Image 1 (cartoon, rainbow, N blue to C red):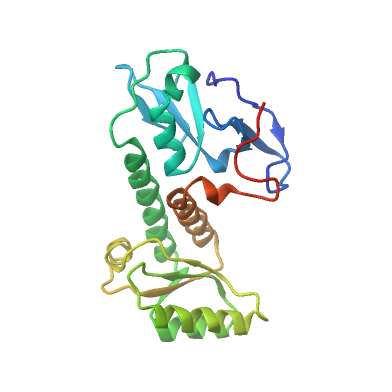
Image 2: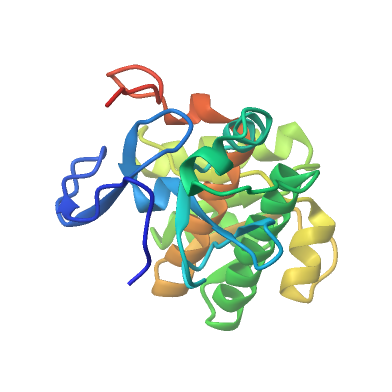
Length: 227
């Protein structure tokens, strides 16, 4: 078992009210969050801080809220050294490195969802999937025209009684195309299935990470809970 830094390890109710999720304490803000809202870091043999997204690296670990500004601030404040009780060096561009790893994982999940037949592409096919009630989320390229996104989002609201669907807008058309083996991927729809759900979770994590710690605000305020 990993030795973690002063962090709760027993299953508790998460911030979303889901029982059974293990909580960890962010080393920067001291707030307790579900593990899915944090990123684990480990100390490499050379004293360098290493992102451990799969939570498999040995040794003592430290958890931070999964937000780029939280990681940047932790590096500035030397929070890694304090939490790990060791001389821990955060490499330059650590927050950008984590962003790349999260995006890579999400795009890999997109590729798997496509292989599983749980993604449809193109404006007309997305509209058809929406009409049939098969869609769990929309995917718009970050560089898509606003008008096309607005029309599909409006269609989603219409077929869901005004509720609408989540829309992932964090990857460019080139990134989506490379992951799916297609060209000019502007709009897509996720069809109900395990692989699609995994991509939706991974892409939402990228979206929250890039938005920053404000993405973790809730009715109790920002991620600033004290011990």
